[in-house]
Image (cartoon, rainbow over all chains, first blue to last red; front, side, top):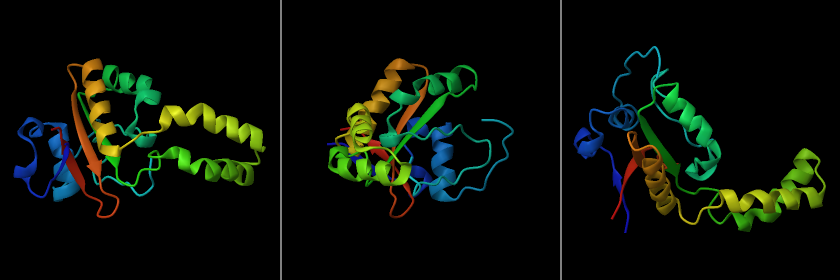
Length: 41
Length: 132
């Protein structure tokens, strides 16, 4: 059975996604991380 | 594709492709372009709950009548349109489809990180889908 894992803190982000754009996305969207400045994706 | 889904991310952080049911097959060339030319190295595949692509066949009449009334189509054309495309876009279950689509993308683009994620349209938060 596949399971939904809520992201309520940085420690909830799977290790394989931390320090990747996926981890950043989850931090920005769910955890309210202040936005960094990007010139391109 | 859903208007209830809005991401809180900085400008220029990501390329965003909207596709019904989190199905990227119809947008595959755009995915390849984003990787090849845009330098994308990770894909967040984000589906959402209460997805209209689940049990799409139940919306056949609404779809057909909507095209007749809203777009001025005749019934035959609208029905043919639905029957041509519904099998391509229909998904059985959001979570299972996102997992399978993430696996498909991982096989197709082996150097790309692909994350299966679910957006809850009720609270606006994203969860990670852990495969059993």
